[in-house]
Length: 256
Image (tube, rainbow, N blue to C red):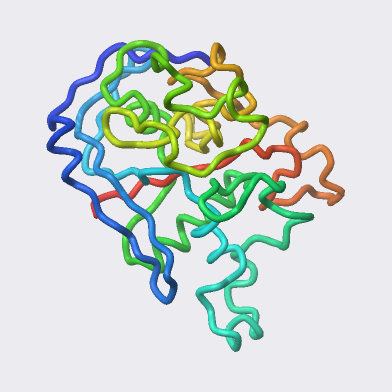
């Protein structure tokens, strides 16, 4: 589906927004990540106007450093793990290395299903007493554009890991230039889960496997059977996409 953003209105200047950042520290761990305020405003997509207000986006894609805590239940005591606490609401053990050998610490978590990303947000909300969730498609595009009205970034290779510079792998987050509102890797590297305007899961922004000519703010991909075709389970894993190393996510905090 191709989407065109027609109009953007901002209530805060980028300079004001850049001052509104907080660091989320996950209780009982040494891990943290940064959340950055998105300026309030509106975006019109396919002739429908959407309002954005009082939300923070993670400055980068969620990395393995944070995802591992939930995945491997590192926030629980040995006794709690032995009792199987939260076992059913956490991912199953992945086949092979979940990072595909691309790299781990500092790299975006990948290959999770949309449902797994949502469950991660539910866990994080419970841990922090804040409301974390995945972005909607229009929120994601609004944050990715950061006021940009063209279809993609000029000098894209300065901002994104794409087919031409990625060597067919993900890279540590935050190594390229940020967009005008301070968000890194909105395009390329791992594509990011969001909820589309019809409520369906969709990956936004393209990935390290896409050529730069195919990546823009309106780039979308919907899951196909090829994304988990080598998964030997029946039914397929609800946590992992065996053939989608390009799938990642970032998160939204509603009203810090």
